[in-house]
Length: 281
Image 1 (cartoon, rainbow, N blue to C red):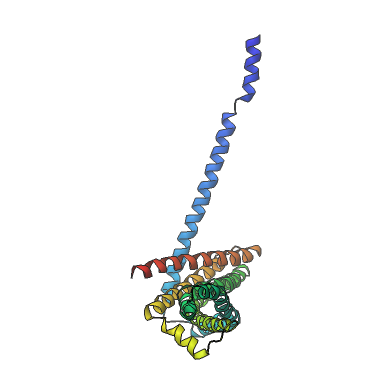
Image 2 (image 1 turned 60 degrees about the vertical axis):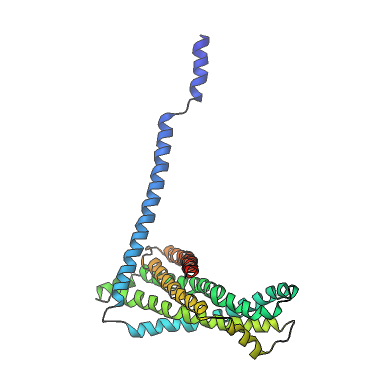
């Protein structure tokens, strides 16, 4: 009797093998499902890029829509980029000047700030700002068109939505973001001159001559080239997330949010690759 009672006390402590196997299979199924969704979305993204690239070289290019998108992406973003560029130069100068004064190298301030802005700070910060504003705008706009079935109506009316909606936006972003970056670099150097005159006295001509004398061709060229890739990545991501949005109204917000996150990640990764390539040259 004692043996039977001791066995009964042990049995409840033994885990249910069947339930444990079901939980394990459910966990494996969820992980497999997430992996399948991830790789499926990656494949859809590259297929989307291929279709948009193929339509780029079509004879029936929507030039008027392209100009409208250049206006929307370039001109409408100028106020935000202007403030960003000025603040970058001003803050970088105010933070760097005391350190250079301690080492007696205050004369190197214009060159250091100009190189920092042109090589890295200007392109990356401007790219992230554009990823937030332009990427979310594309995702929300195309997502709302998807929800309201405007894209389906374009397909029914024999209008190619990839050519009209996607190609124009991607090309406009690819063209305008490098221009915005150069504009932000110029304002950043101007903001640096203003910051240097807060506790010092440097003439405009002297400051800019020292700043531009330190910038070489190989400093400017890689920084400009990678901004074209920033623009293409922001355009492709924003259009893809909006074009493939779901049917519900909540999917518009998800498309805009995921566009910002993924476009910002692409900007950082492209900058990392560009820095490695530039370092090898």
